[in-house]
Image (cartoon, rainbow over all chains, first blue to last red):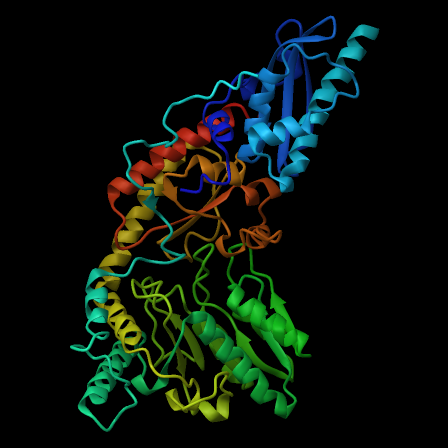
Length: 134
Length: 404
């Protein structure tokens, strides 16, 4: 069994994703009240993540995700839906790569997926700003 | 911080002791009957001697076993035993055939080779090496069906072409090339024709007495024989056709020196003999498994069969799943021992060139899996695969991209 590539936490989040959003309800028009959505990456590029965040006074209250990609990408998106709660959402939001490296045993060749997740969070921040301007 | 590790079983199918083996195209287990014969060639009370030692009974016994095994290999592919030489496997056979011919024919200024992008690495990388040595190589791209046609080969031939190397059965898609037609084109133009037939012997009939083929590579371990032994069929007089790679005692008609591994040759012979007896019944069985598998996956939707269903071997099924990424799919299916769609290339960025040649999008090429069935596959194995694939593909799609 080729499980050595993935640490226990990655396997757990991959097998039992937390806060997974239904693919069919992903369209932004279908988002339930108070949620904003933002995406990063692309399917043809091999990794895509969308976060749907409920934000109050710039603070993330709850999060769910949709993802296409390798087990690390799926697990990261799932793990972040828990980790992001309580965080302040802003345009230049940066993931704590050291923490992710330690928790999820992140392989260096998959750094791009971290940026995909970061892009998705930043896209949410942009949506939030847009909403506040309206 | 709370990571909330779930302690549920990490096995998708907890009742399985080990994953179910669906990777017969990568290699096969040695048939018990083969292993038994091999073990009789190793110890003092067996045929342990050097088959080249003609001065004593030990050597003669080993020689007899090696020659009987050679006849067994020849019987399956319908040629004379003298036309078969032992090698360490299909990779060595491919190297010997292509380099051996290219280097000899270079003396007549024939320095062009025709092969295909869909060939096994043992052929493609050998040709790349010859390119580095100054040879010119044409790499054909298959039709949408995954097949290389005689017309394509004919169009690629030049006045200085020395050898054409085209495989019989493709290891990734199971596509079957028309060896007779391609061979006829080569004969007409006086070009040497080599065929990598590593995937063929347990799957399709081979008739070298009728086929216009000069050189054909075989492997034992794809046919329920041991790893580390293969053979090369040489149609004519070896020395006028090619040069050896390995020099030494002049074994195997001077084409492959080195003390013969009696147990390995005996294993390959027995494996080919069993395959000769079982070929027809196994073909019918594999066709039934293939139909069961594809019918079982149909309700899932968004499943694409890679390759031409009318022109491929039944034991290899290469499928792509819409909206599912390959690495995740392989991991989700970790209770099935399978390969990603392009097994030998899974570590390279060119992973999907065969599937791209078949016209698949990046996403579908990424999401391809090769299932290969064989002698020890059962109906229950296929049912289990269908159940697990259906469950996991549905699950991965449920939180994935809609409408991919």
